[in-house]
Length: 256
Image (cartoon, rainbow, N blue to C red):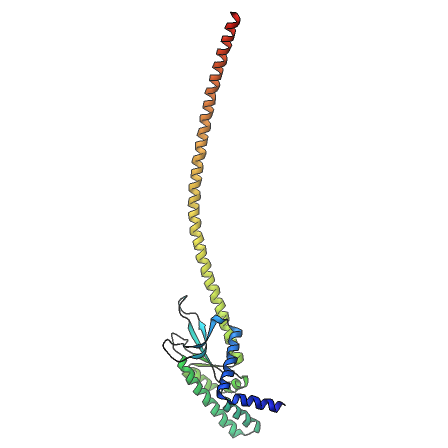
């Protein structure tokens, strides 16, 4: 049963197109797990006017807020034939075949790196791209050739990543996205506080004018009270005169 399953898997991966789709699906799953839909794109023409499209590209923020993004190209590669020959030679203990398969594998990796290099187009993209190897075993085998990997990074400007290392890279980018979002939100808060400060200054001016008007109204009311008391005194005098005249008239009638 196990042998039959392995045979089915080998037949499925024996087709170059199917193998490429499998690697692309795995790469898409990792991007979907680590990033949001707006932080990466599929089949991107990273350079304006170019017909070359990379499988995936992470959308990094541009230099200017609201401007065009800077793309980080990521392409999946799976040199399965060379890796399978290497695994078979190692299992058979054929050291000569192992050495030959390793040379062929690294030659295939260098060839794929040169193909990925066509997606590097600063300032529309980063000055490097990422080659994704969908198997940890394949990635570990390639990374054993440190000098060749360093040469690929230096000359082709292509970073080689396996599933775990790519996920770590994407998580680091996600933290950068969050930090940038916080910084931009902080800038928005400062702008909002500046607007509130300006509005509060206008409100303070209006409040001061209102206070002056209220003070004037209070002064007018105080003046009115003073005048009212003066009028009341005069009215009391008039009432007193009227009472005196009324008493005088009453006394005259009694004497008559």
